[in-house]
Image 1 (cartoon, rainbow, N blue to C red):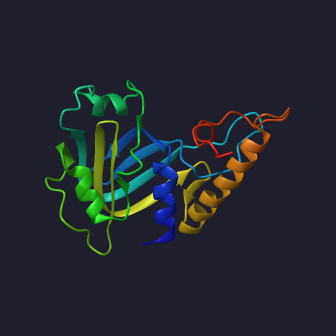
Image 2 (cartoon, rainbow, N blue to C red):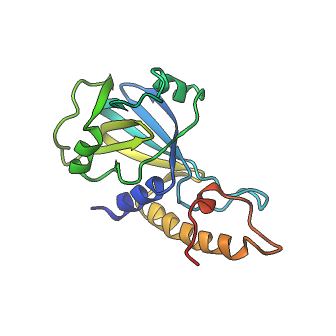
Image 3 (cartoon, rainbow, N blue to C red):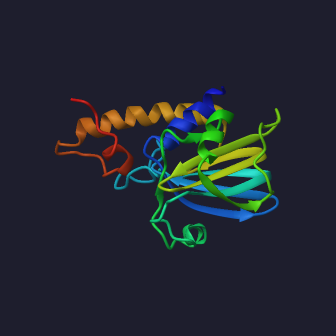
Length: 200
């Protein structure tokens, strides 16, 4: 397992949420998450760091939206509503998120209605030169397979080393956040830090 993919899985799935998607099919599909535990210095000291990360998939072979069977609280048009910012983001299920495991991908799809936005079958395994993403989030979910993926955050496109470093830096930032939280000099309020509560 690539270290940067493992770091990215944890950074997104711990307390992250699916906030948007966009497409320029058949060339590109983009999935955007917030609350991601990758740290980049904020533009100014009055604001928390930007926690939004986009995953861009190039030349996808399949793009599929999932709705859990029996998820009555989910509107029929949730897919379009998310794209048009008409619905609140969906919190990612930490246990059902993968960039690396075909077994986990099959578990994610199980028990869901599948709506194909591109392609017509999920496939059973990824070719050596391809990438994939699969996850569930509050009754909905998503699967994509593609030839290539890039990761884009506040500084721009991230290489694997930057992802690993940003994941490590986030935990240092988190420790500093909680160290200063009840002092006269707290850091700006940060959603991801607030919901990642230390044991004291």
